[in-house]
Length: 83
Image (cartoon, rainbow, N blue to C red; front, side, top):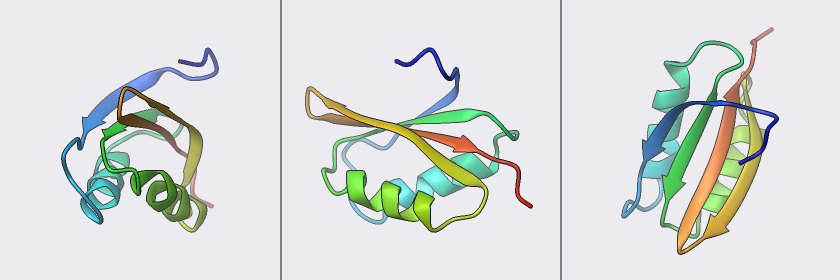
């Protein structure tokens, strides 16, 4: 884990496939305060590109980091201030 951010909440979507990791990530991010980071744990390899694409095209969120280890994909999404 990076020292650049603290995890406010962890969302476990292991075993779920597209589109549920993105759908549930969006719902969880909506509940965060500006600046907070959500950690998403997924087992779907497609979640790497799905969550990246969603974050890139969505105002108010920033994909901070993505990692893969032990068949688990970890995504770190920060809620940003919407302008």
